[in-house]
Length: 271
Image (cartoon, rainbow, N blue to C red; front, side, top):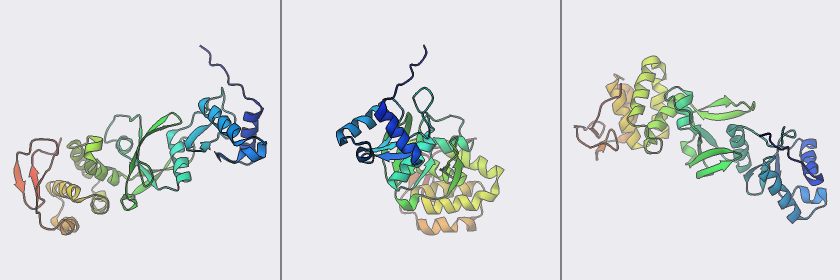
């Protein structure tokens, strides 16, 4: 069935012309009312109508993303990465994409995620924006870092975690991403292929994780043959082991005790 082309009235055309003439990709409620000589109620209804038809994308309350040109067929399709970058721009937030998106990008997991997982310092929870589903994970700004720039299909730069930071997140946020014990295998295989990133992995673990993650990654690295003197930074921050946690959470806590790292070794490194 052929899609019916959306017909625009004079006000709709005026809004798009206003944005295009001023090269604005974001419009807020209140901008158009005085220029177009309409009431604020009419302006709200106009923005809402264009959002429902898919010509505009509602980013946040009272803020809309505008296409550079009238989209073919009426509805505007744009990548979630583009939407995310513009959303964080208006919120003046810092963000980085991680989780399943990063695991797939770096070849740890072949499952293609249907959501975008975002660590950031502004939003929390699940949101659907412009046809893309987002999982926003609000965190302290101190936990944001170790990133790389990624070019999106829209030609803009998006922020992705580095390979080592993705590995740290896979252990730190195991319950959210359901990644342990698989993540231990990812780390082992990555270091086998590229030993040069070992120091970066240790540094990211030190800066962006917690004590439980340090224990788990520290023990893993020791099992992989990383020299003890390279793990001293983690050991100093951990201090003497006062309590024990399972190396693989969610599994029966039966196994040997490793007092050096404060762990109950209840499993092996996945092959």
